[in-house]
Length: 233
Image: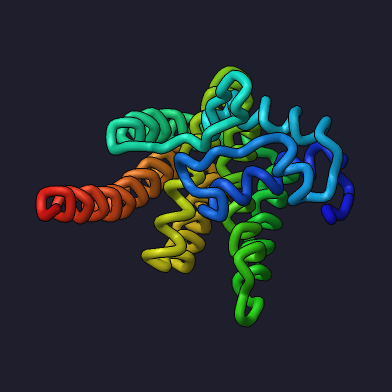
């Protein structure tokens, strides 16, 4: 049963379904229905229907008439396009944040870094706790864009980040890049707090490029592996 905290049941259902998809508990290509998910989460169909509508807008599922939804299968082309756009948007958003951040904004970013460290210190972390750190890390980029003050840029970056989360989860889980990610996030926030526009933008772009290269190696290896066995059969 989903527990309501500060957020609404609607938001809880959305975040729960999103987590199931991003962490692969509902794998790419899987068919899911409102009835199945309502039973799994022990809620009514209404918040599940609303959650699927949001997930479809985010590109994580595709609706099929009278068949429910299918979890999106991402490929190398989609990956490259998403991260190319993210590098440009993230870099510019971070530059704007470095130029515009107030003392309160800087404290907010520091608090998010501290939350990642708190989650990292939990012994024998569960998948849910790992996902919480992923979410805080992704939200850090959203908040940076918000601080930058360009609403259109913020909206565009949030949309791209939704599409990138599955890839980032793969990188963190399979390559165990948690500590490196924390260090890079700290470097980005340090540059923002120092008001160093050029350094903040470069660190943000380098962060995205490094993530892209790591994930690309994984995706390419998976593609080569599947191609090898397809030829063998």
